Image 1 (spheres, rainbow, N blue to C red):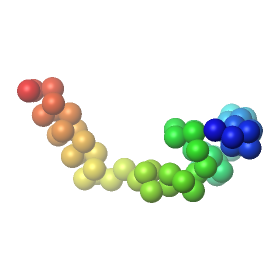
Image 2 (cartoon, rainbow, N blue to C red):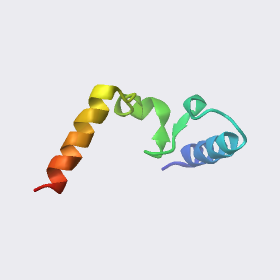
Image 3 (spheres, helix red, strand yellow):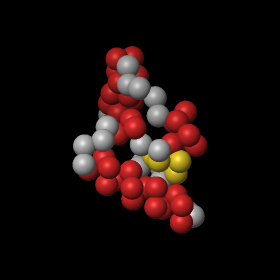
Image 4 (cartoon, rainbow, N blue to C red):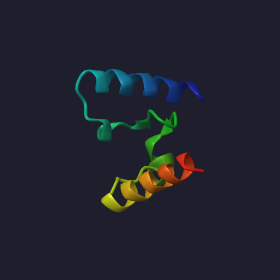
Length: 63
C-alpha cells in the first residue's frame, strides 16, 4: 500500500466516523484499496442472493 492510499484510507475513516455516508468513500475499507478498484466486488443484496446464501450456509452446516 502506498502512502497516498494509506492517507486516503485514514481520511475516509475519519470522515465516515464524523457522519459521512459509507457510499461517499474514495477508498474501500473492506479491501483496503481505491473504491474504483473493487466496485465490481460490492453487489447490493437482493432477496434472491440472501436466500441463496442462507441455503448454502444450511447446506454446509448439515453436511
